[in-house]
Length: 403
Image (cartoon, rainbow, N blue to C red):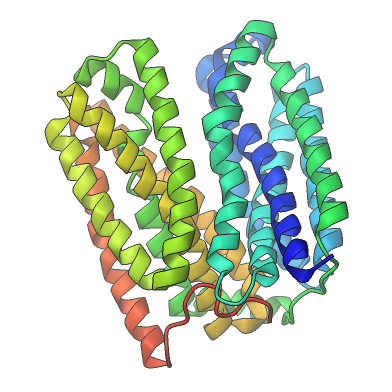
Protein backbone atom coordinates (compact mmCIF):
# COMPACT_ATOMS: atom_id res chain seq x y z
CA UNK A 1 0.00 0.00 0.00
CA UNK A 2 1.38 3.41 -0.97
CA UNK A 3 2.16 6.03 1.66
CA UNK A 4 -0.55 8.26 0.17
CA UNK A 5 -3.17 5.53 0.68
CA UNK A 6 -1.99 5.01 4.26
CA UNK A 7 -2.45 8.71 4.90
CA UNK A 8 -5.94 8.86 3.47
CA UNK A 9 -7.15 5.68 5.13
CA UNK A 10 -5.75 6.70 8.50
CA UNK A 11 -7.49 10.08 8.41
CA UNK A 12 -10.74 8.47 7.22
CA UNK A 13 -10.56 6.10 10.18
CA UNK A 14 -10.34 9.11 12.50
CA UNK A 15 -13.31 10.69 10.70
CA UNK A 16 -15.46 7.58 11.31
CA UNK A 17 -14.95 7.84 15.05
CA UNK A 18 -15.42 11.63 14.89
CA UNK A 19 -18.84 11.01 13.36
CA UNK A 20 -19.80 8.69 16.22
CA UNK A 21 -18.54 11.27 18.73
CA UNK A 22 -20.56 14.03 17.06
CA UNK A 23 -23.76 12.00 17.27
CA UNK A 24 -23.07 11.12 20.92
CA UNK A 25 -22.38 14.75 21.86
CA UNK A 26 -25.46 16.34 20.29
CA UNK A 27 -28.06 13.56 20.40
CA UNK A 28 -29.08 14.32 23.99
CA UNK A 29 -30.49 17.71 22.96
CA UNK A 30 -32.98 16.05 20.62
CA UNK A 31 -34.22 13.47 23.14
CA UNK A 32 -33.86 15.43 26.40
CA UNK A 33 -37.60 15.54 27.23
CA UNK A 34 -37.88 11.78 26.66
CA UNK A 35 -34.91 11.13 28.96
CA UNK A 36 -36.34 13.38 31.68
CA UNK A 37 -39.71 11.64 31.53
CA UNK A 38 -38.29 8.12 31.48
CA UNK A 39 -35.87 8.67 34.36
CA UNK A 40 -38.28 10.79 36.38
CA UNK A 41 -36.14 13.94 36.67
CA UNK A 42 -37.02 17.59 35.98
CA UNK A 43 -36.12 18.85 32.51
CA UNK A 44 -33.76 21.44 33.99
CA UNK A 45 -31.82 18.71 35.81
CA UNK A 46 -31.72 16.59 32.66
CA UNK A 47 -30.14 19.59 30.95
CA UNK A 48 -27.06 18.89 33.05
CA UNK A 49 -26.36 16.02 30.65
CA UNK A 50 -25.40 18.75 28.16
CA UNK A 51 -23.73 21.31 30.42
CA UNK A 52 -21.79 18.84 32.56
CA UNK A 53 -20.68 17.02 29.41
CA UNK A 54 -19.01 20.20 28.14
CA UNK A 55 -17.51 20.91 31.56
CA UNK A 56 -16.09 17.39 31.88
CA UNK A 57 -14.64 17.68 28.40
CA UNK A 58 -13.03 21.05 29.06
CA UNK A 59 -11.45 19.97 32.36
CA UNK A 60 -10.69 16.32 31.68
CA UNK A 61 -9.19 16.53 28.21
CA UNK A 62 -5.92 18.31 29.09
CA UNK A 63 -5.40 16.10 32.15
CA UNK A 64 -5.89 12.84 30.21
CA UNK A 65 -3.71 13.96 27.32
CA UNK A 66 -1.02 15.01 29.79
CA UNK A 67 -1.05 11.56 31.35
CA UNK A 68 -0.85 9.82 27.95
CA UNK A 69 1.81 12.07 26.45
CA UNK A 70 4.64 9.51 26.36
CA UNK A 71 2.65 6.53 25.03
CA UNK A 72 2.52 5.37 21.37
CA UNK A 73 -0.35 7.05 19.54
CA UNK A 74 -2.21 4.10 18.02
CA UNK A 75 -2.75 2.14 21.26
CA UNK A 76 -3.80 5.38 22.93
CA UNK A 77 -6.40 6.07 20.26
CA UNK A 78 -7.72 2.51 20.42
CA UNK A 79 -8.05 2.79 24.18
CA UNK A 80 -9.87 6.13 23.94
CA UNK A 81 -12.32 4.74 21.37
CA UNK A 82 -12.93 1.74 23.66
CA UNK A 83 -13.61 4.06 26.61
CA UNK A 84 -15.95 6.13 24.42
CA UNK A 85 -17.78 2.95 23.43
CA UNK A 86 -18.06 1.85 27.08
CA UNK A 87 -19.41 5.25 28.12
CA UNK A 88 -22.16 5.12 25.52
CA UNK A 89 -23.01 1.53 26.40
CA UNK A 90 -23.32 2.56 30.04
CA UNK A 91 -25.57 5.46 28.97
CA UNK A 92 -27.77 3.17 26.87
CA UNK A 93 -28.19 0.68 29.71
CA UNK A 94 -28.63 3.22 32.50
CA UNK A 95 -31.74 3.09 34.66
CA UNK A 96 -31.05 6.22 36.69
CA UNK A 97 -29.94 9.78 36.06
CA UNK A 98 -26.74 9.28 38.07
CA UNK A 99 -25.63 6.31 35.97
CA UNK A 100 -26.51 8.11 32.72
CA UNK A 101 -24.53 11.15 33.87
CA UNK A 102 -21.55 8.93 34.70
CA UNK A 103 -21.70 7.44 31.22
CA UNK A 104 -21.85 10.90 29.68
CA UNK A 105 -18.85 12.15 31.66
CA UNK A 106 -16.84 9.08 30.66
CA UNK A 107 -17.81 9.69 27.05
CA UNK A 108 -16.90 13.39 27.25
CA UNK A 109 -13.36 12.81 28.52
CA UNK A 110 -12.70 10.22 25.80
CA UNK A 111 -14.25 12.57 23.23
CA UNK A 112 -11.97 15.50 23.98
CA UNK A 113 -8.81 13.41 24.30
CA UNK A 114 -9.53 11.63 21.01
CA UNK A 115 -9.85 14.92 19.13
CA UNK A 116 -6.77 16.44 20.77
CA UNK A 117 -4.53 13.48 19.95
CA UNK A 118 -6.29 12.65 16.69
CA UNK A 119 -5.70 16.16 15.33
CA UNK A 120 -1.95 15.94 15.88
CA UNK A 121 -1.94 12.43 14.39
CA UNK A 122 -3.89 13.56 11.31
CA UNK A 123 -1.35 16.36 10.85
CA UNK A 124 1.55 13.87 11.05
CA UNK A 125 -0.12 11.60 8.49
CA UNK A 126 -0.74 14.42 6.02
CA UNK A 127 1.58 15.30 3.12
CA UNK A 128 3.79 18.30 3.71
CA UNK A 129 1.75 21.51 3.76
CA UNK A 130 -1.62 19.71 3.96
CA UNK A 131 -2.07 19.26 7.70
CA UNK A 132 -5.02 21.63 8.00
CA UNK A 133 -6.85 19.75 5.23
CA UNK A 134 -6.29 16.46 7.05
CA UNK A 135 -7.59 18.01 10.28
CA UNK A 136 -10.60 19.33 8.34
CA UNK A 137 -11.36 15.85 7.01
CA UNK A 138 -11.24 14.45 10.52
CA UNK A 139 -13.49 17.22 11.85
CA UNK A 140 -15.83 16.66 8.88
CA UNK A 141 -17.01 13.54 10.69
CA UNK A 142 -18.15 15.77 13.56
CA UNK A 143 -19.98 18.23 11.31
CA UNK A 144 -21.54 15.42 9.27
CA UNK A 145 -23.05 14.17 12.52
CA UNK A 146 -24.83 17.51 12.87
CA UNK A 147 -26.26 17.21 9.34
CA UNK A 148 -27.28 13.54 9.28
CA UNK A 149 -26.65 11.73 12.53
CA UNK A 150 -28.31 14.04 15.02
CA UNK A 151 -31.60 14.69 13.14
CA UNK A 152 -31.92 10.98 12.32
CA UNK A 153 -31.02 9.97 15.88
CA UNK A 154 -33.56 12.41 17.30
CA UNK A 155 -36.25 11.04 15.01
CA UNK A 156 -35.48 7.45 16.02
CA UNK A 157 -35.05 8.29 19.69
CA UNK A 158 -38.35 10.12 20.01
CA UNK A 159 -40.19 7.45 18.05
CA UNK A 160 -38.65 4.22 19.33
CA UNK A 161 -37.06 5.20 22.64
CA UNK A 162 -34.11 7.41 23.62
CA UNK A 163 -31.79 4.45 24.30
CA UNK A 164 -31.75 3.24 20.69
CA UNK A 165 -29.57 6.11 19.38
CA UNK A 166 -27.02 5.37 22.12
CA UNK A 167 -26.86 1.73 21.01
CA UNK A 168 -26.36 2.99 17.43
CA UNK A 169 -23.43 5.11 18.62
CA UNK A 170 -21.93 2.00 20.26
CA UNK A 171 -22.01 0.26 16.86
CA UNK A 172 -20.47 3.31 15.17
CA UNK A 173 -17.74 3.39 17.82
CA UNK A 174 -17.02 -0.28 17.18
CA UNK A 175 -16.61 0.50 13.46
CA UNK A 176 -14.33 3.41 14.38
CA UNK A 177 -12.22 1.14 16.59
CA UNK A 178 -11.91 -1.43 13.79
CA UNK A 179 -11.01 1.23 11.20
CA UNK A 180 -8.38 2.66 13.54
CA UNK A 181 -6.93 -0.80 14.18
CA UNK A 182 -6.71 -1.56 10.45
CA UNK A 183 -5.90 1.78 8.83
CA UNK A 184 -4.05 4.00 11.30
CA UNK A 185 -0.32 3.23 11.16
CA UNK A 186 1.66 2.69 14.32
CA UNK A 187 3.36 5.96 15.20
CA UNK A 188 5.47 6.72 18.25
CA UNK A 189 4.57 9.54 20.59
CA UNK A 190 6.19 12.83 19.68
CA UNK A 191 8.96 13.95 21.98
CA UNK A 192 7.24 15.09 25.15
CA UNK A 193 8.67 16.62 28.25
CA UNK A 194 7.74 15.74 31.79
CA UNK A 195 4.42 16.87 33.18
CA UNK A 196 5.97 20.04 34.57
CA UNK A 197 7.46 21.08 31.23
CA UNK A 198 4.15 20.41 29.48
CA UNK A 199 2.17 22.36 32.05
CA UNK A 200 4.61 25.19 31.41
CA UNK A 201 2.75 25.64 28.12
CA UNK A 202 0.08 27.35 30.21
CA UNK A 203 2.61 30.06 30.99
CA UNK A 204 3.42 30.76 27.33
CA UNK A 205 1.56 33.89 26.16
CA UNK A 206 1.44 32.50 22.63
CA UNK A 207 -0.46 29.38 23.73
CA UNK A 208 -2.87 31.37 25.90
CA UNK A 209 -3.37 33.86 23.07
CA UNK A 210 -4.26 31.09 20.62
CA UNK A 211 -6.73 29.73 23.16
CA UNK A 212 -8.32 33.17 23.46
CA UNK A 213 -8.65 33.37 19.66
CA UNK A 214 -10.48 30.04 19.62
CA UNK A 215 -12.73 30.98 22.56
CA UNK A 216 -13.70 34.34 21.09
CA UNK A 217 -13.90 33.33 17.45
CA UNK A 218 -15.78 30.05 17.92
CA UNK A 219 -17.93 31.45 20.71
CA UNK A 220 -19.02 34.39 18.53
CA UNK A 221 -21.65 32.25 16.79
CA UNK A 222 -23.17 30.67 19.87
CA UNK A 223 -24.75 33.74 21.46
CA UNK A 224 -27.32 33.65 18.67
CA UNK A 225 -27.08 30.01 17.54
CA UNK A 226 -28.06 28.72 20.98
CA UNK A 227 -31.44 30.39 20.42
CA UNK A 228 -31.69 29.94 16.67
CA UNK A 229 -34.99 28.02 16.78
CA UNK A 230 -36.94 30.68 18.74
CA UNK A 231 -35.28 33.36 16.61
CA UNK A 232 -36.54 31.70 13.43
CA UNK A 233 -40.04 31.08 14.79
CA UNK A 234 -40.70 34.11 17.00
CA UNK A 235 -38.82 36.85 15.11
CA UNK A 236 -38.42 35.70 11.50
CA UNK A 237 -41.84 34.04 11.47
CA UNK A 238 -41.05 30.57 10.17
CA UNK A 239 -43.08 27.58 11.33
CA UNK A 240 -41.44 25.06 13.66
CA UNK A 241 -41.28 22.55 10.79
CA UNK A 242 -39.57 24.96 8.40
CA UNK A 243 -37.20 26.03 11.16
CA UNK A 244 -36.12 22.41 11.61
CA UNK A 245 -35.45 22.12 7.87
CA UNK A 246 -33.41 25.33 7.98
CA UNK A 247 -31.24 23.83 10.70
CA UNK A 248 -30.40 21.05 8.24
CA UNK A 249 -29.37 23.79 5.79
CA UNK A 250 -27.16 25.30 8.48
CA UNK A 251 -25.71 21.88 9.25
CA UNK A 252 -24.92 21.24 5.58
CA UNK A 253 -23.15 24.60 5.45
CA UNK A 254 -21.01 23.64 8.46
CA UNK A 255 -19.83 20.52 6.61
CA UNK A 256 -18.94 22.46 3.46
CA UNK A 257 -17.35 25.23 5.49
CA UNK A 258 -15.23 22.79 7.49
CA UNK A 259 -13.72 21.30 4.34
CA UNK A 260 -13.28 24.68 2.63
CA UNK A 261 -11.74 26.14 5.79
CA UNK A 262 -9.12 23.41 5.75
CA UNK A 263 -8.24 24.29 2.17
CA UNK A 264 -8.04 28.01 2.93
CA UNK A 265 -5.82 27.46 5.96
CA UNK A 266 -3.53 25.24 3.89
CA UNK A 267 -3.26 27.68 0.97
CA UNK A 268 -3.27 31.02 2.79
CA UNK A 269 -1.77 30.04 6.13
CA UNK A 270 -3.91 29.86 9.24
CA UNK A 271 -3.44 33.53 10.40
CA UNK A 272 -4.66 35.01 7.10
CA UNK A 273 -7.46 32.46 6.73
CA UNK A 274 -8.72 33.08 10.26
CA UNK A 275 -8.53 36.86 9.92
CA UNK A 276 -10.58 36.83 6.71
CA UNK A 277 -13.17 34.39 8.05
CA UNK A 278 -13.56 36.35 11.28
CA UNK A 279 -14.22 39.52 9.28
CA UNK A 280 -16.71 37.60 7.15
CA UNK A 281 -18.45 36.22 10.24
CA UNK A 282 -18.64 39.69 11.75
CA UNK A 283 -20.33 41.03 8.59
CA UNK A 284 -22.79 38.12 8.47
CA UNK A 285 -23.78 38.56 12.12
CA UNK A 286 -24.38 42.27 11.54
CA UNK A 287 -26.57 41.37 8.56
CA UNK A 288 -28.50 38.82 10.64
CA UNK A 289 -29.09 41.41 13.37
CA UNK A 290 -30.45 43.89 10.83
CA UNK A 291 -32.41 41.49 8.60
CA UNK A 292 -33.71 39.04 11.23
CA UNK A 293 -37.42 39.79 10.53
CA UNK A 294 -37.08 39.03 6.80
CA UNK A 295 -37.39 35.41 5.68
CA UNK A 296 -35.58 35.30 2.32
CA UNK A 297 -32.38 37.03 3.49
CA UNK A 298 -32.30 34.87 6.63
CA UNK A 299 -32.26 31.65 4.60
CA UNK A 300 -29.21 32.82 2.65
CA UNK A 301 -27.53 34.22 5.74
CA UNK A 302 -27.98 30.95 7.63
CA UNK A 303 -25.98 29.11 5.00
CA UNK A 304 -23.15 31.67 4.91
CA UNK A 305 -23.15 31.78 8.71
CA UNK A 306 -22.67 28.01 8.98
CA UNK A 307 -20.01 28.15 6.28
CA UNK A 308 -17.90 30.68 8.18
CA UNK A 309 -18.61 29.64 11.78
CA UNK A 310 -17.35 26.10 11.28
CA UNK A 311 -14.96 26.92 8.44
CA UNK A 312 -12.70 28.40 11.10
CA UNK A 313 -12.46 25.17 13.10
CA UNK A 314 -9.53 23.64 11.16
CA UNK A 315 -7.75 26.99 11.27
CA UNK A 316 -8.13 27.25 15.04
CA UNK A 317 -6.72 23.77 15.57
CA UNK A 318 -3.98 24.09 12.95
CA UNK A 319 -3.06 27.44 14.46
CA UNK A 320 -2.65 25.93 17.91
CA UNK A 321 -0.56 23.04 16.60
CA UNK A 322 1.69 25.37 14.61
CA UNK A 323 2.02 27.70 17.61
CA UNK A 324 2.84 24.81 19.93
CA UNK A 325 5.37 23.38 17.49
CA UNK A 326 7.18 26.70 17.54
CA UNK A 327 6.93 27.71 21.19
CA UNK A 328 6.34 24.49 23.16
CA UNK A 329 7.52 21.63 20.89
CA UNK A 330 7.53 19.12 23.77
CA UNK A 331 3.90 19.81 24.63
CA UNK A 332 2.14 19.72 21.24
CA UNK A 333 -0.52 17.18 22.22
CA UNK A 334 -1.16 19.01 25.49
CA UNK A 335 -1.56 22.30 23.61
CA UNK A 336 -3.97 20.58 21.23
CA UNK A 337 -5.97 19.41 24.25
CA UNK A 338 -6.06 22.96 25.62
CA UNK A 339 -7.54 24.13 22.32
CA UNK A 340 -10.23 21.44 22.42
CA UNK A 341 -11.12 22.86 25.83
CA UNK A 342 -11.10 26.35 24.29
CA UNK A 343 -13.74 25.31 21.73
CA UNK A 344 -16.06 24.28 24.56
CA UNK A 345 -15.26 27.36 26.64
CA UNK A 346 -16.20 29.41 23.58
CA UNK A 347 -19.55 27.64 23.39
CA UNK A 348 -20.10 28.35 27.09
CA UNK A 349 -19.16 32.02 26.67
CA UNK A 350 -21.50 32.49 23.72
CA UNK A 351 -24.35 30.68 25.47
CA UNK A 352 -23.88 32.78 28.61
CA UNK A 353 -23.95 36.10 26.76
CA UNK A 354 -26.96 35.01 24.74
CA UNK A 355 -28.79 33.81 27.85
CA UNK A 356 -28.24 37.15 29.59
CA UNK A 357 -29.86 38.94 26.66
CA UNK A 358 -32.74 36.46 26.42
CA UNK A 359 -33.51 36.82 30.13
CA UNK A 360 -33.74 40.56 29.53
CA UNK A 361 -36.15 39.89 26.64
CA UNK A 362 -33.53 41.08 24.13
CA UNK A 363 -33.18 37.93 22.00
CA UNK A 364 -32.95 40.03 18.84
CA UNK A 365 -29.69 41.49 20.16
CA UNK A 366 -27.89 38.13 20.46
CA UNK A 367 -26.11 38.48 17.07
CA UNK A 368 -24.58 41.75 18.31
CA UNK A 369 -22.93 39.87 21.18
CA UNK A 370 -21.31 37.66 18.54
CA UNK A 371 -20.20 40.72 16.60
CA UNK A 372 -18.43 41.97 19.70
CA UNK A 373 -16.63 38.66 20.26
CA UNK A 374 -15.54 38.39 16.61
CA UNK A 375 -14.27 41.96 16.73
CA UNK A 376 -12.29 41.40 19.94
CA UNK A 377 -10.80 38.18 18.50
CA UNK A 378 -9.00 40.23 15.86
CA UNK A 379 -6.73 41.75 18.52
CA UNK A 380 -5.08 38.56 19.86
CA UNK A 381 -4.95 37.16 16.32
CA UNK A 382 -3.03 40.21 15.08
CA UNK A 383 -0.65 40.00 18.05
CA UNK A 384 0.04 36.29 17.58
CA UNK A 385 0.58 36.64 13.82
CA UNK A 386 3.05 39.48 14.45
CA UNK A 387 4.74 37.57 17.26
CA UNK A 388 5.14 34.47 15.11
CA UNK A 389 6.45 36.40 12.11
CA UNK A 390 8.87 38.16 14.43
CA UNK A 391 10.39 34.77 15.25
CA UNK A 392 10.66 33.84 11.60
CA UNK A 393 8.25 33.02 8.82
CA UNK A 394 4.76 32.18 10.02
CA UNK A 395 4.29 28.52 9.13
CA UNK A 396 1.43 27.64 6.85
CA UNK A 397 -0.83 25.14 8.47
CA UNK A 398 0.78 21.82 7.94
CA UNK A 399 4.33 23.07 7.64
CA UNK A 400 5.16 20.98 10.67
CA UNK A 401 3.42 17.81 9.49
CA UNK A 402 5.33 14.56 9.52
CA UNK A 403 7.96 15.59 12.00
